[in-house]
Image (tube, rainbow over all chains, first blue to last red; front, side):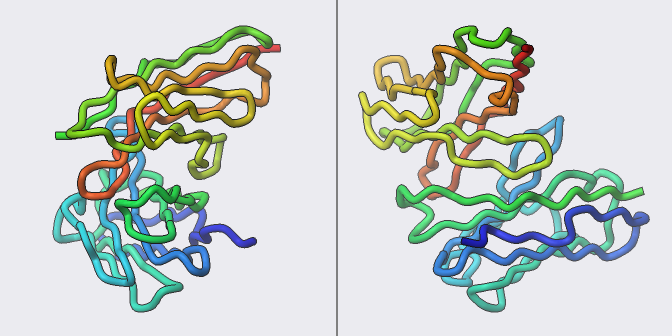
Length: 116
Length: 111
């Protein structure tokens, strides 16, 4: 079975540029999560969707960050304009059922983002 | 608010040594508890979980017991292998349904 697929695996760009990260959840999963991982702050939940609807975006750091889920099989996380402090590994995860249930979250391999 | 505290690493062990990684939590009620493992260059993978007090989660020789008296979920393995070298994350299911992770503990096992 295909797992959670993220693209690109690596992204290097200059500050001020728009960055778009992509995620394809596991087929049949209806909850999707975006996380950011840094050495300083560890793993932080940015936003999660249930049935394509954003449920909790309180972790989104600022207005430069936005996320969409136009359908059950695709989500994007966009940063515009990007800044060097946005450099991190961004993970997408998906699960079946409500986030409050006991189903585990399945993680993609992440996108390593470097903003110069 | 809900939080997870796990021992800081890195932890360096010789092959076949006993492993303990401590994890304690603060939460309202009795949340589900998880251990995730992250191998180099990969995303997190669920290692084991426990959904209620006194439950023991186990997988690949790893175990953790949900202790509500001590609000702990320590990870143990009797004999580690080089292939266990990874970063281990303790997590709880928060009141909003999201996962709340500890900072992670890096384990290095030497042959």
